[in-house]
Image 1: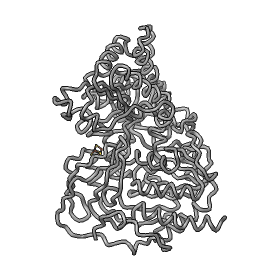
Image 2: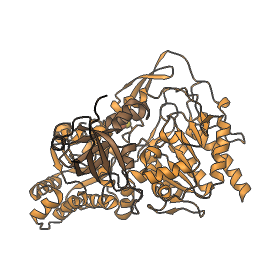
Image 3: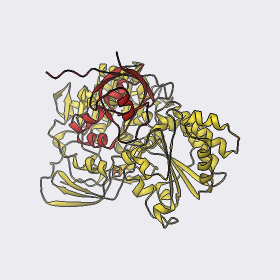
Image 4: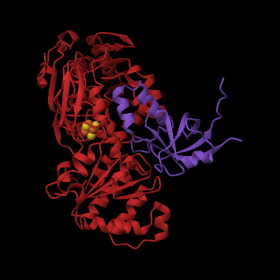
Length: 463
Length: 121
Ligand code: SF4
């Protein structure tokens, strides 16, 4: 049975938890099927023009996908693994849901984390669970563009959709971002190569500037490359801000601080002023390094400064396929994009206090629900040590260091390949998913709905 | 004499690492990519490090041993190291986020020690 609608994956609520036996059999036919305009969710570009060639449970070709998209589509066949492991032992999905609900429903300071590689429909349920259990909800945003999120709240964001960039952007700046490796179709689909409505010459009509501490693979695409000193983004951005305001600067100091001569910054500023529609895409080179939210804030303010002269916008290059969806869903459920604590029955926001990295590194959480992310590979050692010491539930299509140590690990169907739903592109545009083939594994949504139903009862009984 | 020097480490994404995530994190592509340190060729020459030789990186928060390889052309300036995000880069990160929620994951001060090559048995 080919599941086509959201309801097929999310049966109406009943008191029965989801079981593997209620799920339809996977298709076994070996006929070649073409899924047109499928959506790739590997990175924030969320390309929705991929033609998938599907044979049974295998995608054999992903037309128009980049190297990352191809690896994503061609490596998500159905794996021979149990749908659920409890303490490393195969178990039924029902038993897993029960155990997960007991862990989360009886915890005093539970943490929900991840969410950037699942559908917005699942994200919504994950926030509900956090609300029922009175825990923290945080997403992978906190360790990618969380600092930018803080800066947005501080000074706002002058922004645009990728469609506007494609049709209007004649000066494209990448700051601390390497799309050639992280978002391979960024240049060709949105920012550099396309012939736009107001840029009939395509690449010829655009100027590309890259600012980074090293010559990344992206720099080959640049007309101008500025190699700044490591950890000097803040100083470099404020140099440009000063030039935008017409302030006199000491040439020697500027070069000593930023590693780039003042004349080069002045030349860049003149070009920025002359642009008709300037765009700054910024990456984790800015947010993960010394200065963090102060760096992002400086870039947002520079963008605002430039609007005295011309139209200028900026946009973080978001990594995961639906990390932008996670920001949106957590915002419309709680009022804040990440780092939210629901322990008092109302949302409180405080990065540094309620962010997953901190809650774990300080040894505070006593249970966790990890959805579609891998903190056991990416978090600091103190955070990983604490996570390993508490019972936690993990949902992931693949085996990861996080699923290996989980008290309850669910193997789930892959969003976009097996599961429909909605994701948000990095410019906050919602895009529907068009799955390629059915999976015998449950979706995140099914598991989370099962946990939510059970947790509600446990919490009510406790009260 | 111990060959030791301070560097700034930049962990980051690579397309090989991205493909490796899809293939599976315990697979060869991902594992090879996150266990490979890139250095400026001039730094390798100065410290007499052969391609593939193991070096020890120490930060304020941890230490790891990793094989060093020369970066292509002038991709990396002298004094900078690059490694794909993963287990090793995380071991060198501190838990403190300075109130931001984000540990300092790029631009980490490290000391690099050249490890002796083991004689072939
Ligand atoms: S650019 Fe990103 S979304 Fe587009 S095909 Fe490549 S990995 Fe997928």
